[in-house]
Length: 217
Ligand code: SF4
Image (cartoon, rainbow, N blue to C red):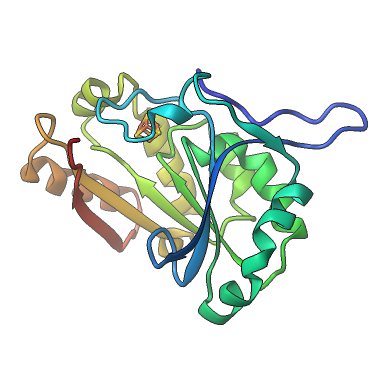
């Protein structure tokens, strides 16, 4: 897999997140209530219309932060999070590459904060299992469930997406997942999107689907 992974802890050291940006006071954009989006570098995919290309490579610097340092940066909005049932949304890039960091952060963050993760689910399943106890809600961009369309658009196989959807279903977490189903210009059709929903529902009782269009810039 390519992509920037969270720095692993060495003896006497702690996890660090390759932080790309922090975006405060987002209203019901990437999670319920008021959220702060924490974007980290690294992604295993190569989407043709990637809107976050800066998070993929090394052309834009990131700052490595510990869970404690991130908490100090985001706690300014503690009251907003508590009042609106909001919290922290981890994005990127691929948030679940940093599952250990998310887990460590959730253990020091106020329990009233909710933790959201934006993900493609195209990560090794052990990363999803690591994140499961820490993440309250997953926002999953499946691209398209047709393997041929997926590969044409992302240059990647989507078998891990299917496997990880199954893990979420087996964990009884379908109610904690929003499935994003994009219309990808030149790659899929509305019929393909309906097929994707059918394929996802064959895996488990996922109920929340978000149909939207990728907008080309
Ligand atoms: S999953 Fe997101 S960040 Fe990764 S390549 Fe695709 S659009 Fe870019």
